[in-house]
Each structure stands twice: as structure tokens, then as C-alpha cells.
Image (tube, rainbow, N blue to C red; front, side, top):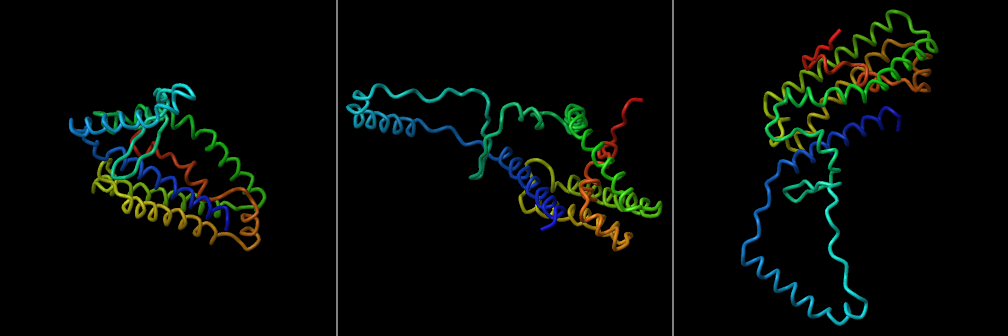
Length: 233
């Protein structure tokens, strides 16, 4: 399987994890146990202590339950739950926070994290262009393919938000899979369009080179500009 195929699979799995996390985080909160259930649980605990008293006396008192360190937060619902580091929850939308406030809060961290990758893909393109001897028309075709795919992805995201398909609390795994499929189709279309502009020897060079169209599309596109973010000069 090619590196591009593995990367696409990783993108799908990452998006599926986000979908399941959102679904679990927005799931219903379990109702507190009733008084009868608490009494039953207390009686069972007393019986358990009586049954195991001799063994505990022999080996010493059992340690108390581990204290909550605050490092993990368990989120879940509908039969699905995962443990998320407490610090990671800061990057999730907070209660009462609208999308614009969330964007402004998280965006600087996202830009700092992606900046090295933007430099990396630009260096990779420059090196591949030299190795494969790309001409100006081929470079223009790559830019056009990437811009077209990025626009299609933007339109798909807006469609999902306006329809409610991608809104927290409404997103479903099946909807997430459909969204990921549409995104991957746009990415694959950009890759095929660029490769169609290459000669056979250039395609062979691309297969052996670290440069990848999907990688370049993801990190070179300024998605924050699509969200209406304008950096200060």
C-alpha cells in the first residue's frame, strides 16, 4: 500500500475518533443512583467486607481507591467512553462558548503547531520540482488542483455546519464517515489531476520522493483564511 493510501487511512481514523469523542462528550449524563440503589450497594459492600475480612486481616488493610489526580477526564455516553487528559479538554469547546470565540482562543496554538509542517511541505515541493524538473505549467496545475480541492472541502464543511450534520451534539458516526469520504475524494482528485500533468519519468520520481499532494494540500492551505481570519500586518 502506498504512503498516500496510509495517510488517507490515518486521516479517516483521526476524523472518526473526533466524531466518536464529540458523540460521547455530548451524550446524556447518567442519572444519579436512587436511594434504594445506594442502600443495596451499601449492603453488598458490607457483605463483601464480611466475606473477605479474614483474608484482609492476614495480609493487612487493602489500599483505598486511587485518588483522582485530575490528569484524565472520562467522557462518554451511549455505551462509549474514553479517558481524555485534563489538559486536552482545554482545546475542546467550553460550555457557553460560541464558534467564533472558540476559534479565536484555539487558533494561535493551531497556527504555531502547523507552521513547521507548512515550511516542510514547501521545502519538499521545491526539492521535488528540482528533481523532477517541473515546468511552470505543471506548478500552476498543482496550485490549481490544490485550490480546487481546498474550495470543495470548504464548501463541504459549510454544508455540514448549515445542515447541522457536523454540529456538536448532532453529528453521528455515519455522518462523519460520509464527510470524511467526501473530503478524501477531493484530496484524491487533486492528486490525480496533478499526476495527469506529469510525464512518466516524473511520476516515477514522485513515487520515490517524500513529496505528496495530500500532505501538501493539508498543510499549505491556509484554512484559517477561509474562516475569515486576517492576520495583523
